[in-house]
Structures are given as C-alpha cells and as structure tokens.
Image 1 (cartoon, rainbow, N blue to C red):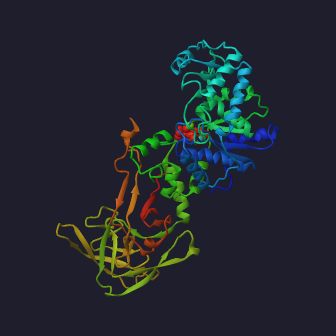
Image 2: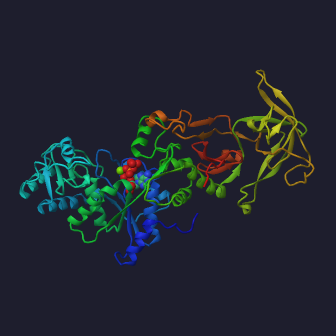
Image 3: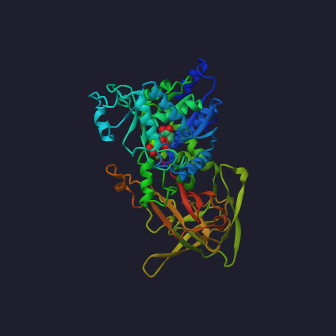
Length: 541
Ligand code: ATP
Ligand code: MG
C-alpha cells in the first residue's frame, strides 16, 4: 500500500485555505442517508473524507442524513457504522441530521421573520409547473406575499400537525427567474406524517436535504463539505442557506466525480431491488458491490483503500474498470494469502508403481513471497486426485499438462507419467493409471527429465469434500442496453459440489483466505470455499 495518499485538487484547496489562514483546522464529514447499505462508490467518499482528516491532522464526523423518515431504518445505521470501521476509519463524532431538527426549525422561523421564506399552498405538481424550465423563467407563487405573521402562524400550524401531507410547504424566497432552477424558491420543509427512526412521532414536518445539509455542516464547524458532482448546481443554495441563516464560519462545498464502475450497479435504490426481488441472497451476497458483499466476498479492506487511491479524485465523471479493483485485491492477497491445494473437478490418478499402504510427507511452501513462513507438510500417497482439466486425451498445441504418455510434476511431490486411461461404462474417463519417477521428489536432481508442467493434486485418502463456489458478474457484460433487471447474468454463481480439498482446509476457521494454486483466491465462507478473485489479471494499466 502507498504510504502517503496521492495529492488531489481537493487537497490543493485545503492547503491554500490553511496557508491563507482562512481556517485553522480541517473538519470533514461523511454523510450517508441510512436508506440502504453502502457500496463501493461510498468507499471513495469515505476514503476521501476520512483520508483528508488523517492527512491534515483534522477531524471527520459520521453524520446520518436522515431527513426522509419513510425510507430510513436503524438496520442501515448499524450496517454503515460497521462498514466504515471495516475500512479502517473511526469518526470523530457520530451525528444525525435529525439531532438538529429543532435548530433547523428555529432557523426556518428566522428566515420567515426576515421575510426570506413563505408558506405556499401549491401542490407538488403546481410547484413544478410554476418553476419554469431551463429556457423559461418561473412564475411567482400566488402565496409569495403572505405577511410574516401569517407565514409564522401557518408554519407553526404545520408543525403542530394541522395539515395533511402535501397541503403546504415552506419555501425560500429567492428568485423565480434565476437561471439556476434550484434557486427558484426551493422548498425548505414538507409535511410527512410518518414516524422517524430517531425522533419517533415528534415531527410531522421535515426539512429538505438542501436546507438540512448546509445547516448541519455549519453547526458542526465543517470546513470542507465534499460531495459528488450532481450537487454542483445546488452549491448556490448551499451558500444562500449558510449566509441567510447567519452563520459566521461558512463551510465550503467542493464537488468531485463519483465513482462509476463499468457494468456494475451503483445505486442503493437498484441494489435494494435486487435484494427485495430475490435476485441475490441479501445485501451481503458476495456478488453485490455493497461493502458488506465485498467483505463477505473476501476482499481485504486495504485493497479497497489502495483502489480508491489509484483511481484518484477528479472533477469529471468517468467509468473505472472492475479489473482495477480486482487487481488491487490480487496484489494484496498475493502477498498475504497462504497457498493450498484444492481440486474443483476431480479425476482420480492411481500411481501403480507406488507401494500400497505407503505414504510420505512432502513440503509445500506456504507463500513464496514470504519464505520466512517456511513450508507445510502434506501427505502424499498412491492415489491422488488431479483436476479433470489437467488431463487431455487430445491435447491442443502448447498444452502444459498431463497427456497419455506425457509427464508432469505433482506440485511439491513426484514426477508422474500417464501410462493408461481407464474408461467407465458410458465412455467417460474413469481414472488414470500412472507411474512415478523414483528420486524425482521436489528438491532432488531431475535435470535429465523433461516434464510438461506442474499441476496441483490432493491425496485421495486424505482429502475432504467441501463445496467450492465461483462468481461471475451480476450483470451480463454482453448486454449494455435496457432495464438492468433484464440484463442480469443467469449464470453468476457456479457451485462445484464435488470439490476436494486438503484436510487442512476442511479444518481451517471461517474467513480464512487462501490461494488455491493454479485456481484462484478463496475464502472459507459459511462452510464452503468461495472465490474472492481469479488468478488471471485482466487489468491493463
Ligand atoms: P446512491 O445513489 O447509491 O443511493 P447516494 O449518493 O444517494 O448514493 P448517500 O447516502 O447520500 O448515497 O451518500 C453518502 C455520501 O457518499 C455522499 O456524500 C455521496 O456523494 C457519496 N457517494 C455516493 N455514491 C458515490 C459514488 N458512486 N462515488 C463517490 N461518492 C459517492
Ligand atoms: Mg442520496
């Protein structure tokens, strides 16, 4: 992992603010809405916000943006906290936008008293019609000129529950002809008669995101409020709110490009549909791009941080290839994962010249990148299983595996030659009859013998059956158009029920990660071995 986070344009802004004495410390926040589980896109925002606090000796809050009671839930709050900690970050303070409901309400009253906000009876549909378009100015609301007293009374009645959902809203009085639609008297409060996961039934009016967010930032003393590009057009409203609510210390909103990954669903709303419609086995299905899914999949958090640093922070949207994330995962696991042997589709090999009843221990290197870890002892015997794909009756050119009459080395053990192929009743290959070369044990001098390659194996008398699962993308990469529900890959999960593993693997604890040599990286997950990432790197820098 890189020692120092690479610099980006946000760092430049912060350093300038620090050097000009505009701020005397850096304070950021990560503000998820607890309406679903976090995904890999959020990791970018987390790495950025918490990373900045770390880099400048500042602070970063976790703030739940919980202004929409109908969609939010404590289940998500707990999951989000777990995900952030898993990535290796700890927040300074844990806050909820709902902590500020009373203060936000008081500021709304202040705006009314200053003649900068009014209660409007237009329906949502009418508000939209009055707003105009990008080419046409909007029209003033017929309720624009209500007196301060009337506005105050109506707003207090809204709070007291006198009106039904949608009957009235509070709007900012800004400019219906502004070229920026967000400035055309935006709604600040709406009526929602619903219980809130934090405040229960205390409120039936809820502040809008665009009003809540700047106030929450200002109240917490946030210096840099970092958000994604789609909020760029909201920045004038952000600044208007901070200024007109009378905050002295004004947080600065900075936008950056969100992370998009090719052929990957990155929206809580869509991910929720996959879960609700049973297309995946929950939010933490290892195929999901959620952080809990990725965690269960076995991706190390360090690899995700490394990925976020490599993609960098830009001001223009782009799409990143999933292969880069997988590359980071592979790099990390190559350094850290123990090697082991597993055979996904077994083919039996009988070594006819190896004495019946004999067995011996052979050395198996734990991790070639960590020679200090040494070797593990594996029992070798007369019968082994190899991968069915590692034998071919009619080998294609450059086939570096076992063929009839050909020789390969069994990893860590002996060189064998295939003498005969035994067929079953249906004409399928039943097993192979091989002979081994004495004095060819790994480490012995075999310079005179030419072998085709090295293949992995398990001891037929000492292996155990543990299912192995491989994963493929949830979205069919060949279909680029249409509703994503119709693009789902029908074969995103492949189970090898007959897979055989070393006894060591059957006994290891849950969540242990391995490189199955020549197969891929795997994690023990709920009694099976599930693929983290394959060995083949398709990433091209
Ligand atoms: P989604 O569209 O997936 O529901 P969101 O933006 O609505 O995501 P929030 O909970 O509001 O989700 O996001 C919390 C923070 O994470 C915000 O600051 C948001 O800008 C940031 N974020 C969300 N998605 C991405 C992404 N793909 N890349 C970078 N940052 C993101
Ligand atoms: Mg959102």
